[in-house]
Amino acid sequence: MSSHLSNPDLDPVPSEQRTWSQWNIAALWVGMAVCIPTYMLAASMINAGMRWWQALLTVMLGNLIVLVPMILNAHAGTKYGIPFPVLARASFGTTGAHIPSVARALVACGWFGIQTWIGGAAIYSIGRVLGWITENPDTARIAFIGISPIQLLCFGIFWLIHFVIIIRGINSIKWLEAWAAPFLIVSGLALLAWAVLRVDTLGDLFQNESGFESNTAFWKSFFPSLTAMVGFWATLSLNIPDFSRYCKTQRDQAVGQVLGLPTTMTLFCFIGIVVTGATVQIFGEAITDPIELVSRLDSKPVVVISLFAVLLATLSTNLAANVVSPANGFANILPSRISFRTGAIATCVIGVLIMPWRLYNDLGGYIFTWLIGYSALLGPIAGIIIADYFIVRRTRLHVGDLYDARGRYGRVNWRAVVAMVIAVLPNIPGFINAATNSAGTPEAVFPPVFDTIYDYAWFIGITLAMLIYTVAMRGQALPFETNEEPE
Image 1 (cartoon, one colour):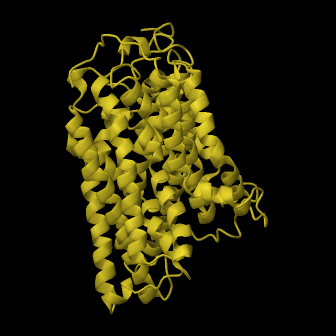
Image 2: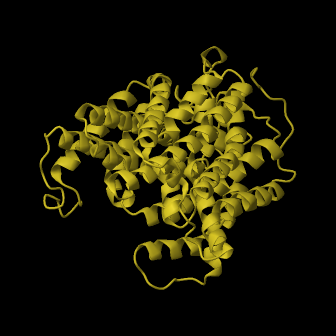
């Protein structure tokens, strides 16, 4: 292996170190799926006009769809013990792999910042409940960054907690996820029980009327919402090998994901629906933010425990979903100089610099610009990697050449780069329209037809990329004996 393409964090995981079972993978997904954005997903669709069951089915369907590329991409990680940036070398080349790995890393940095801001907000709420913080955040706000000094301090405290865990490595993340999963499930069910017991009429929670004037209006909202649901985990569908490389068997990674992903996402969206509906009866208004809801509870001990659950949920999500991938992605840029820990620290720094509170406070931009926008980019990357591994190479990789720039995979596979660019192009006009609309621009830059295409961004991107790459690579894959390790 070339020292320029290899380090202990990127090298294949030996068979004896692949100790993760299906329960570890399921716990990983519970820890990642239980978070504030999950809780608020269905509420955002209900606000757009959907009935509660329509929003819930949209979430379930989106997660069942994204589960397919999730399991497919995880296969190579389990079979060869390699992380996502190394798997990307097979399709994009040893140098070209920087394109998908850095693209995935930058998206994760954005998510890391958002989740860290949410955790900092929970700390801020605990301080207010206990009487330690008495400021008015609106009047104390620092004009340049848009938040108060104490809000910034709380954000920094939660950021520092991540830093301490990160420097201890991947095993500390595995331990945290396994410990947090049952606590988070119990906490969510306790919140659901509170809502059910506090309302006078349980049936009223499920009586919201459709906000659409016609079926056509519903479908216009459904498809972009479905694309956003797929986009929610489009990131993990790429870098799932970063975790599946530690699994004992393919059954462990597949069953663990089936048990952990769609079930947890659907359950916690349902909890968000019921609890938000209950707040209308209890407080006279719909409270979609669980941090604000918890801060209104009567008992200080209950508030503190509940906000601790929010902190734990956010921490477990952030470490697994938004630190591991960019850490490996940045390490892949210069393996001889950048380790997993160094890459993770870079992730933390970038997550602060983007000022995530500005992004999080705009739900319209969050759904239609952020989620759909990066799904338009990551969908084609997933399509290329899946086509390369399953169709072109039929799951056969030569691991040694993945770490050798002079090997059979070359430095840059321009066929993959061209396929990605072509698959992304149809969605760019719709993305620009969505971005300018979120910025308050009254008129769209491009015709409405591009908005319709953009509603299907992930689906169009992954399909086009798979077709173009498969045709472009016809006859290019060389037959060879692999150095496969036992699964």
